[in-house]
Image (tube, rainbow, N blue to C red; front, side, top):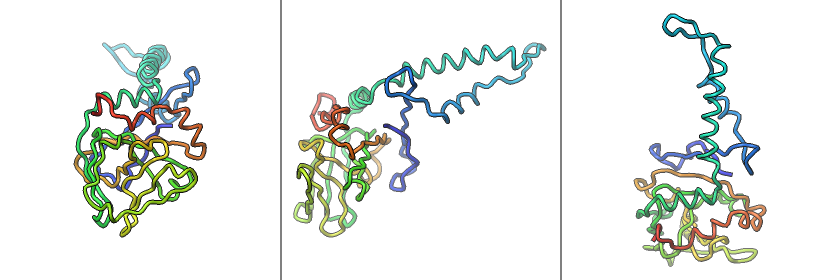
Length: 232
């Protein structure tokens, strides 16, 4: 599920938090948030008004209001009812990579990463990601360079030992790691980036409690660690 989060404390005020709204029961996996419909109704609600001296009552304008709602709704369906995988593809195609830099809290670890200024962030709820509040965006290994601190890292693994949870030995911060879904890439923590290069964040919940099923339903995740003509 992709949803809007309130501005996390680690984000600068100028960074936009994007929201994707999906639509309803007639379309697979879609629903209309009630607050969204409420705002639409409030904007389009007919009011008593006068035009050329002729009063237009609520009853007379009700039909026009319904037409306006229908047109607005149809536009929303056509524009926003694409799948999550399609959104990610369009997202990557639209944005050329920029150079982000970042690191841990104590400064022992520093890195650079090439990715879009508009980042697609995954919020995982598996056991370890819940404990460490992991949010990350995925890049190919070729897009990530550890500038300093390789000797100051330690790695924790468990279960399949595919994911490599890398931490700073001094301050304990995980600024990047190797995700199980993308062992050929890196997951980078957006809150560990230096300010100035991130334009917006789109946060998507990923159900790590049913990891295998979630990855199967979301094949685009695997492709995010692959270099493409758009990402270089």
